[in-house]
Image (tube, rainbow, N blue to C red):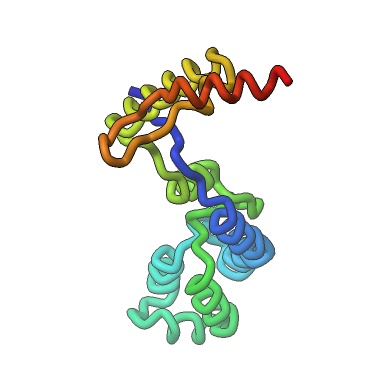
Length: 165
């Protein structure tokens, strides 16, 4: 069965989108730093640490970066990577479609199958109510004592009589 949207939290979604869009310049800068300073294709801290270990033979990536004279670049990449997750972005800084879809999904609430079936019943009743005369519809009330809807003919007749004046 297809999912039917019950509610979409627009404001929190827009806030999350703005936060991601603010990171675009940082994403581009981070990609450039990986390319210019280290020349590696996979832009992750793990790949950078492996590359540094292979280049220098040291297990400590900070010591390896310092030995190559790239400690400042390494520290900047580590600091920026803490707040920017490159796996959410393409190399040009645009947000990946899968991330957008997951974000939208996280702010969307769907009807359960039972809720949707019940909603369809209610909408059927509303459609039926819209086919009758407005004064008859206004004369259908919920009786709390009997716990059911009732049609009050006297009320409908008085509405109709009043409208003909």
